[in-house]
Amino acid sequence: MRVIAIDGPSGVGKSSTSKEVARRLGWAYLDTGAMYRAMAWLALSRGVSDPGDVVELVRGADLEISTDPDGFRIEVDGIDVTEEIRTDAVSAGVQTVSGVPEAREELIEKQREAIAEKPAGIVVEGRDITTVVAPDAPVRILMTADEDVRIARRAGENHGTADAEAIAATRALVADRDAKDSQTTSFLTAADGVHTLDTTHVSFEEAVEAVLALAKEAA
Ligand code: C5P
Image (tube, rainbow, N blue to C red; front, side, top):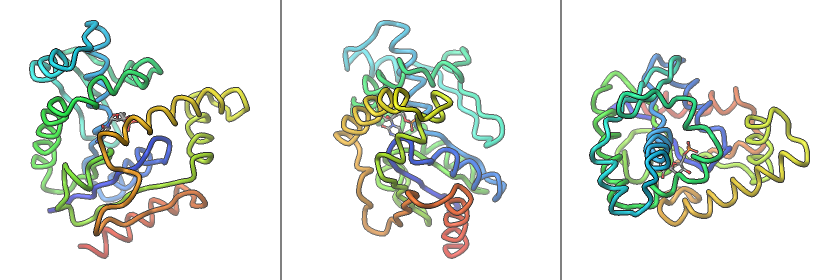
């Protein structure tokens, strides 16, 4: 089983690290957060928020996600939502989907199918990959970083700057989302057998190399 499972809170650098590890290994890459985001986009655009209706929406939706680390696209019901899923509105509303256990089950099933389709190797990132989606993965990592560092990184990505205004706006969004997410998924402490990779004082390249070293050790 060639699977690297990576979990962690927002702004920790999971996506960029996972993507780069996948590239260097020539493996596929699955961004499970994008799946929750795409379903949240659909729920928002249809005005659906009742948990029962959300489950129906998720069950009926045709979700297509690419697993190419160099050409990420995601479509829902034939609509390309690659850009739309990154808006603040979707980030703020994503728990309309991720907070509903039955909706999660549907998406977890799709994630397991996507993993099974890539026996040559896949890097999967999210919040519950090391514990629920792929607890048998030979490499399981929890990425962490001090909250201030995560917020500054996310502010830089979203606002192109980490000035006081951008930091304040980002802090509210990040802290709120992590607090809500931690009610449904356990990504703040490492489960048994899961390696912790603290990136507070670690460069991007060092983080990538640390993951590759763990993968080599497990091979
Ligand atoms: O990682 P990203 O910020 O794109 O994830 C968006 C949201 O999707 C998270 O805030 C969380 O609510 C949800 N999520 C989840 N389980 C995962 C991945 C993401 O609940 N495995």
